[in-house]
Image (spheres, rainbow, N blue to C red):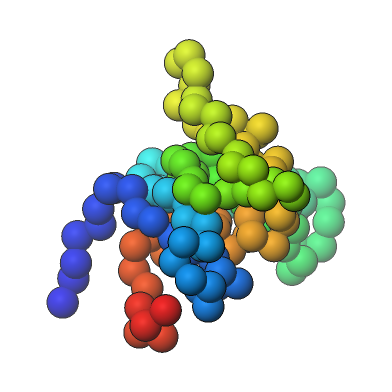
Length: 138
């Protein structure tokens, strides 16, 4: 059965934190990409593929947008906050809210997240609030 996609933010706990006590876990507030946001990211990837063919590269070899750039774009749109995110001295790190007309997550927030965790969070945003049976047990 088809289930409607919701744009309501959801909490996500990194896999590496799931074995910890709840009070020790960091939770990230994420929002799924809208159809338009998803299309813009997909268009950027397709544009990069087309550009490689136009540039004279072998059309059988696809060059896509850098995965890192894609992850950053997904996080800028989908990362909405965090709870219990600590620095090296175990002090809480405040989430800097977007300012002005720009409603995307400031890079100063994303810079604080480990690269491996950025990739996991981007995947969670893409998948939305759907989780596997194994994840739901954690």
